[in-house]
Length: 136
Image (cartoon, rainbow, N blue to C red):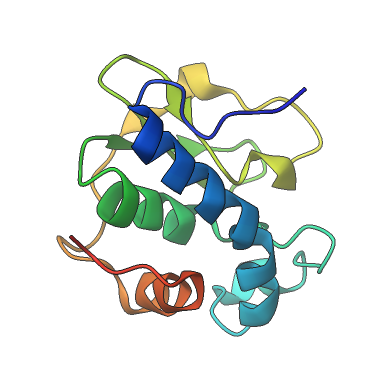
């Protein structure tokens, strides 16, 4: 079954989202562990390239693809780590890095959270460049 990038948006935006999502895994492999926080580097593998990149990927989707029409959310995990994802005004969850986990993500425990910067971080700009994205 084909998984849609974001079923809530118009067809043109959805097509763009799906194209970026398709390229995301390879772009994260190119980034490797260089742009990860130290605590995530030992967990990253080429087979699961989204590991540790939830914040950056959420920034990319929010700033470059959804034009700020989403709300960042943060979950404090039992392991002591955190996980970032986006929620749309409709309540739909957008989480392109969920595949880094082996068990269901407790989205119900998430809290709305702002990004650390108003504009895309330096690390997300690197990923945006690899994905061929520019801000509109």
